[in-house]
Image (cartoon, rainbow, N blue to C red; front, side, top):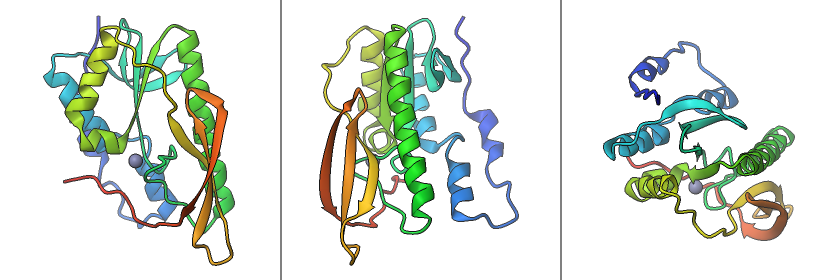
Length: 201
Ligand SMILES: [Zn+2]
């Protein structure tokens, strides 16, 4: 029996802090909670009549949206936390901390993906920006996976490392790895941007 859990119980989790939080504390709160991208995705899945478990166990940790009998784990990955090549912004303070964090998250995502695939599960890793930009499209992708339509494998690049390239800090060197084949790597040099991606209201 698949238990469906809506988003109602999570509403109370917001607005708890009276004390100002540091930047990393704020980010830590955002991560791991019920992000609005996840809620939006669940809404679109629910609308299509799909029933799922939220934050449920898989053979490799918990998935954001899990179809246990369909053996499909769906993850909504934050663009900052999981190294989105379009939206990662390299912090310029506490660089050692953030570098280790990013590398650790990406390594864990790759390992989790391969364990799930080896266990015969399908895996769907979505960027939060994809969910906001095209919620119907990503919901259809999930429907397709449940019906056994596996997309052709293609590189899913993630930023695993980001370093300042020059003294003026104008350029950065990024190491990208493929989520499905972490041995596949490429390095790009790009102009630094602090442009942040924003979810549409
Ligand atoms: Zn992104």
